[in-house]
Image (tube, rainbow, N blue to C red):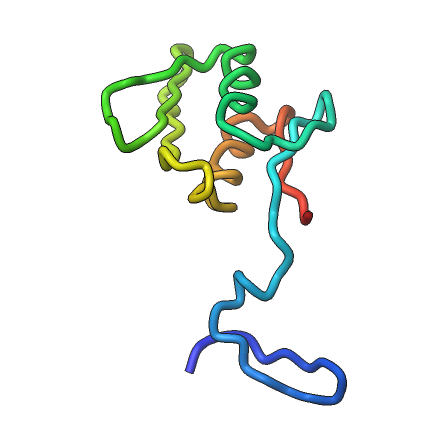
Length: 102
């Protein structure tokens, strides 16, 4: 059995997909305190930081920064944009983005 045991209102239950139990995450552009709500918003922010869009893979949105070896790869559908993608952006742009609970 894998998951997280949750105690709530006197009842203990096993939550198999712990990611669904915890609050949703959002990517925030720190300088403007703006929540990234679409890829067009994200692309504008990344472009202003020197990231360039790659068009090689039709199933992914990819961004590369010439001065680094970093590549950001995101699912084409924004609904599939998960916290692991958000943290990848944060690690590569430490002072510009944060992941926060919704």
